[in-house]
Picture 1 (spheres, rainbow, N blue to C red):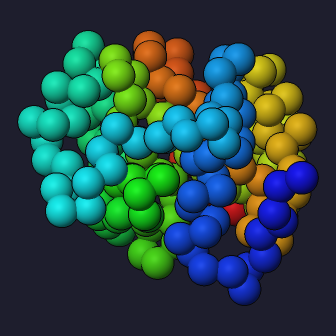
Picture 2 (picture 1 turned 30 degrees about the horizontal axis):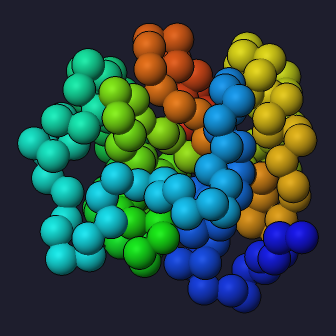
Length: 174
């Protein structure tokens, strides 16, 4: 049985839980407690830079830049920074609108993950949205916590970019 997180727990624990225990929407892969590291960047002393990200996500780098530029253009109050969440979780790129987290970006080999924590209103809107059925099913089957439901989309193509772009809009409205 997994530990249930509450809003009183440290943010670090929430993020580690997010990347270790939640299935990735739209795929069968799951980050298990088998020592799999969710971020390839684990060394606290080496914050990822653009070259490191580009080398890792390779062919999907243009998808990442397109997506992130779209976010910055549509949400002018967005701010972002790399955060290290411990050896198990490694580095994640946190993107916020003012003080509210919109999503987390984690580079992977030839792809990248975009993770969201959606509250009840956002989940209800997602159900009514044109999101792929696999993402909606993953979101609805995710355990409900005080913070909301966690969903991660592994981005490998333009359809995935449209999915995460829509999730950002839903998150921002709710």
